[in-house]
Amino acid sequence: MAELQTTTIPQDVLSVPELELGTNPNALALRRPFDPVAHVPQEVLTKLLEGLQQDENNGQNEHSHFMHMAIPRIGKITCANVISDLYAMGVTECDNMLMLLAVSTKMTEKERDVVVPLLMRGFKDAALEAGTTVTGGQTVVNPWCTIGGVASTVCQPNEYIVPDNAVVGDVLVLTKPLGTQVAVNAHQWLDQPERWNRIKLVVSEDDVHKAYQRAMDSMARLNRIAARLMHKYNAHGATDITGFGLLGHAQNLAKHQKNEVSFVIHNLPVIAKMGAVAKACGNMFQLLQGHSAETSGGLLICLPREQAAAYCKDIEKQEAYQAWIIGIVEKGSRTARIIDKPRVIEVPAKEKDSELW
Image (cartoon, rainbow, N blue to C red; front, side, top):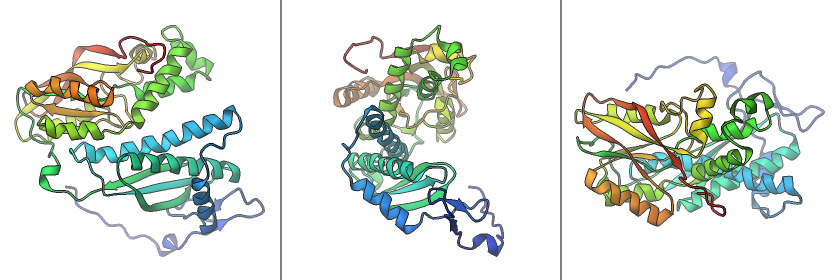
């Protein structure tokens, strides 16, 4: 573990920041150029919390309906991403969650009063789905609207799985498809002709809309059942796939194994059409190399070979979502790699008119 280093901070930097409302009450400006701990005024926070209690079904038009559908999903994805750190250890019960929220200084008062309660509602709803509650946190002002959190629990040794017991002969299972970063970017490019022109020959607008919905659905889904089944099928360790991409997290997991093993990945389950989009972009995402960032991705699990197929079948039975065997554990020097020409598995394999997956 790195040695903790201390830095002396001038006293004036530690002083309580002041908010300048000036003549425009919508323009929250900090008196100092930058201060990472500027708190939202109490009256503003109270108003935001009141907004959280209002009826969700208050959309008056198509745009409002979209806002009330899409923005809570972002809060839900955030919560799912936060709590996945517990699920990756096989922990299925979360005792407490905190929400960390930054309200953007660039928002108008109306934007703030609509967007922030919706974000909070999505986070809270995902926490309830996980069987826990949000008991506190911190709210600050910031140039960017930001949401995050903390998940914690107290548990017995038999309730978690230390991720260091992979053995030669294990297989690697992935519980969510890759390609969320590509799907979200492709969706943004629908309104950017110069970027859309790069991918329109390999994907249609309908394909992009569907990939985006699949990405949002996948990111918002909890890894709780996947974590619970790790115990049933004797998993030897796992990690969640997020910002470092599949290969980055696989390498980190391999590095911490007690045995001299390495991971070899042969298969890449990818949201349908996103592999082709990634290639058309000149490989800027490096999706097929395992470097494309994921948000609230699935669990990468080391399972005994004889248990893996049953695990995948069980998770599909319980969740109606697939999981895939994507690689093997072999003797090695605690590294991970993807073979030169991995098999790309389109998810879903076939389109169904009335179903997302």
